[in-house]
Image (cartoon, helix red, strand yellow):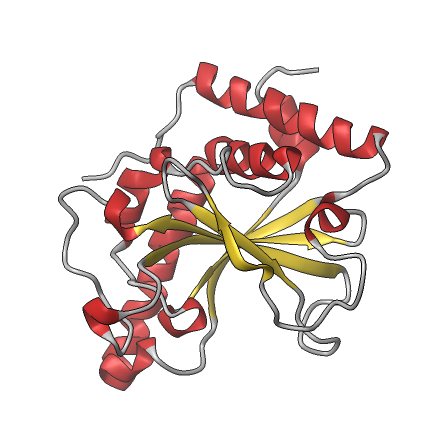
Amino acid sequence: MTENKLTSMKGLQQAAHTVIETVTQMASEGRPLMQRVLPDGDVHWWAHYPDDDARDAFTRSRWFYHIHAPGDRDPSEHGHFHLFLHRTQLQDASEPLGVPAEGEEAAAFVVHVAGLAINHQGLPTSWFATNRWVTDEFMYPASTVIDHLPLYNVDATEEDTAVNRFLTAMVALYRDEIAAMLLARDEALRLLVDELGPSAYETANDILASCPIDLDSKIESLGIE
C-alpha cells in the first residue's frame, strides 16, 4: 500500500529552497515562466511548447506548456504545464487502466503525473489530474504513479534551466498533495466507469481532480522564512 507521507522534511525543505531560488531568479531577471517557454513570435492556442516536449536526457521525464483559447480556461490562468514520467521509468508496474488506441505502437510512452496551472504573473495556482484521453497517456492506477513520483526529474532538458529546476522541485515539494489528488482521480474514474463502462476513459470529464497551490503557506509550514 502506498504511504501518504512520501517525502522527508529534509527533502521538502530542499525542494522548497529550489522553488524559492528559481522563482526569485525569474523575478529578478524580469522573465517569468511563460516568457522562458514561449517563442518571441506568434503563440498558438493548444500548441505544445516546446514543439516536441522538453525531455530529460537522463530520466526521460518530460513536460510541455500550452495555452487554451479564451473562454476555455479560467481567466486567471495564463496557461499550464503537463508533466509526464516516461513509461520506462515505471518499474514492476501494474496493468494500465487505459492505453492509447495504438497500444505498444503509440508515438509517446508517457504517463501523466499532473497538470500545473500558471497565472498571468508566472506563478503556480493549482495542480490538476486529467482523464486518459486528454494527453493520450498510458494511464496507470494512482498507487503506481505515486510510487514512482520520486523519479520525476526534468533538470536535464534542453529548455530553460530555471524552468526545469522549478518543475522538478515543485513535484517534490507537493508530492503528498499530488498523491492525494491522484487517489481522488481514481475514485472519480471508478464512479464514471460504473456508469459508462470503459468509454469513461475516452471522452468528456477532462479534469477529474484538482488541488490549489498557496506557495507562501506551503513554505511557511516547513519553517522556512
